[in-house]
Structures are given as C-alpha cells and as structure tokens.
Length: 320
Ligand SMILES: [Mg+2]
Image (cartoon, rainbow, N blue to C red; front, side):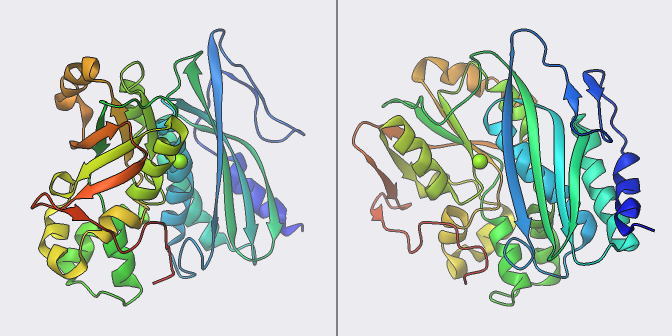
C-alpha cells in the first residue's frame, strides 16, 4: 500500500465544492474559471516546524493557521478567497495528525468558501506550504503603493497578543492561565480579515497585512509608496490582557513581533468619513493610529508626545 494514498484520501474528501471549479483534485492540474472582469490574486506561504511553529503544535491549529496566513494576504489585496493548493511534507503519514490537520484546515476553508483544488505530498521534515488564489474586480485590488501624505493610517483588531502567547509558550514571559487562554487563539488561530479587506476596496489608498510586525509591514507600505508616517503609541489597539502587561513587556510585542494578521491601511482625508461609517458592520476594532507624511521614515510618539525609539524593528519569531 502506498502510504501516500492514505494521505491523498484525506484531501480527496474535502468539503467545499465551488461551481467555478471545472476540475479539482486528481488530474495533473486543476481547472478553474475566472469570471470576466475579475483578476486573480495569488499568494503563497510556508510554515516550517521549529521556525514558524513548535514541533508539538496541535495539528488542527496548524491546518487552520496555514490557510489563515494565506487568506490574510488575500484580504490585504481586497481579494475574495476562491481556491488553494497544499504542499505537505510529513515525516510519517500519521492518521491522527492528518485527521486533526484537515479538521482545522477545512473549518477555515468552509468559512470562506475556499476549495482545495490540488497539491502534493512528500516525506521529510514537517513543512506546510499553501498557495491561495482569490478574485478581485480588475483594477480594484488594494496594494502597498498608493499611500499619500495626509492619508490617515488605520489598523484592524488588536496588536501584540500573538507575541504574548508565543513568549508564554517559549517560557520567556510566563502568563497566568487566564491571560494565556485570552491571547492564545491570536497565535494559534489568527483571524484573516477577509470581510474587512473586501469592504476597503475603493476606500483604502494602500493596505498590507501585519504578519511581520506593524513597523516592518507599515515600512513596506511607506517604501512602496515613497512616503513616511507618524504613529501615536497611545492609539495602538491593545487588548485588556496586553494593557495589563504593558509596563512589563513594553510596546515592542505590539509593534515588532508580527503574527497578528491584522490589516494596516491608509485612507485619504476625503474617504475617512466613509471608512468611519463602516465601524458598525466591520466586526472588529478599527483604530486610527497616525498619518502619512511626505518625509520618508517612520516616527513614533509616546503617550507624552515625545519621540519613541523602538528596541526592535522586525520580525523575530523564535529569536528571543
Ligand atoms: Mg502579507
């Protein structure tokens, strides 16, 4: 018995069946239909054991997270998830692991109507690669490029909880059980802000998802747009749990860790009212955290209005 025939059975039985899939899993390639006037948004992301997750991570969380990080990239483009491909490298085909992995993967796929249309399995160190495709009306995609001086900078949700959960799990900064329970889903099951990204089409001048930390990711927007920004730390959206630890951990986990998968976007003054009007239907917090300025660079102001220099500016994953 080919051990990979076992693996493939798990993926043949997947739950989403889209009308625009002409040919799904099982041939040399999948065939899908792109509606006239739509563009394809394509993205790929890989999770590597020991780098992006701990070796003993729950398989259901891994399945969920592997797809979520890809859907988050589609969200940042204002694209609607449609199809995805899975490249899975496993040390051994383990039925229990695959059952859990598929449960998490398909839970999120079902929630977004995204269909697995193909993939590949191989033997080796655990590695989960997903390539996702989304649809967006031609010319309507959000990019990193359009921010202009005077635009307001917004972020969805809350920042830093995933970093706190990881620090607890690594034993770097232990949390009480209730605090860990509050922040843990933000690390294990990040929410891709797909619905929010769709609502921002035609409103945001630039957008990105916060995967590597607000400073690094907003930095990509600033570089692509040829502008700078000024952010006020007092306006950073922090959870009650994070606020309780702010004195001990500082601003850095919220600014520079990543894994939050919130959307950071810019809005021209003329469209701020339209974005503010979205609040009741957005389904998450929305915070104006600063503004785009003409001079390059990212300036931070502490709650007293003084310049603040962060201790770390990028993504550190397991580097602590
Ligand atoms: Mg991204």
